[in-house]
Structure formats: C-alpha cells, structure tokens
Amino acid sequence: MRLKWIATAVAFGCLAFQAPGVAVAQDKPTADQAKNNVNDRQLMQKIRKAVMDDKSLSTSAHNVKIIAQDGKVTLKGPVKTEGEKTTVNKLATDIAGAGNVTDEITVTPAKTKKGS
Image (tube, rainbow, N blue to C red):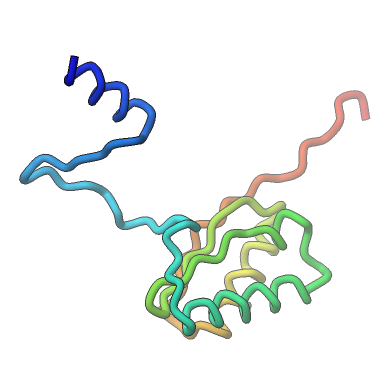
C-alpha cells in the first residue's frame, strides 16, 4: 500500500527524490526559480521596463520571461521576428552587462489566415 501511495504522490508531483549518484538537470532556470534578492528583482524590473517601453515590440516580445539569478539573466519565450529577439536581447544586455544574458527566446512567426 505504501508503494502505491508513493507512486501516486510522485505522479502528481507531491513527492520528489533523487537517488544517490543520479544527476538532475537544473541548468536551465525557470521563472519560479528567479531569486528573490533585491539585486535580482531590481535587475528584472529594469529589463522589464526597458522591454515594455519599446513600443515597436509585439505583445509576445513584451511578455518574454525575464529570469535573474545572481546577476545572470535568462530570457525565454516566443517573439514574432528575429528583429524582436535581437532587440530584447540587446535591451537586457545593455542593463545586465555583456556575458550576463542567456537568450532562449524562440521566433514564432504570426500565423497567416488561410484564403488570404
């Protein structure tokens, strides 16, 4: 019965464990892993403000995830063009500094309507 409970808990994400000697991939930060220290929060806020202030960017670009951990920034999410990807990356790099930004932004062009 205990094994059945553990299997159910693991399946629903209620329980997690790591076997000795087994590596768990934690190299890619997610938004919920952003640090809550003052410097990282301020860094994320400055980058978000710069991105939001650029009215040439699409809503998708305005909604890119900005994750800061110990002064290192990761950008994630879709944008509509390579130009938007470059712009968001440049804005973040200008604020966080060269070598402190990891760009994981994907370009997902807008879908065209059939019959147009």
